[in-house]
Length: 78
Image (cartoon, rainbow, N blue to C red; front, side, top):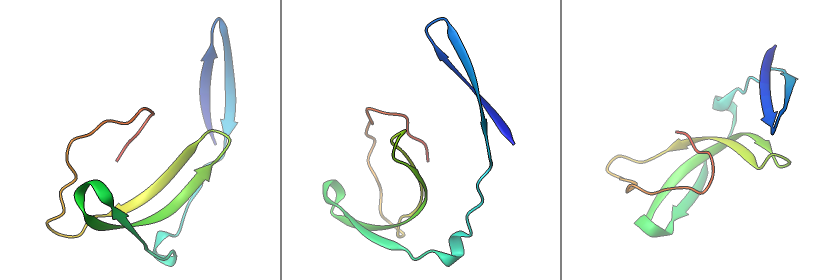
């Protein structure tokens, strides 16, 4: 079990979370076309929390595909 501390103004709230394990080898790769770089990449959606607007994905870039530097208006990690 993990704990996440959230702060909202002067109030602090601790939320208990449960770890999630995903057997990614059992998930199918989803082909996606990235318009800005005119290339196909593949992804597996591992976790989604629509209420928080959060998704965790495993992404596979074929050899030679380069994703140029860019920014996101939200939290993002690779």
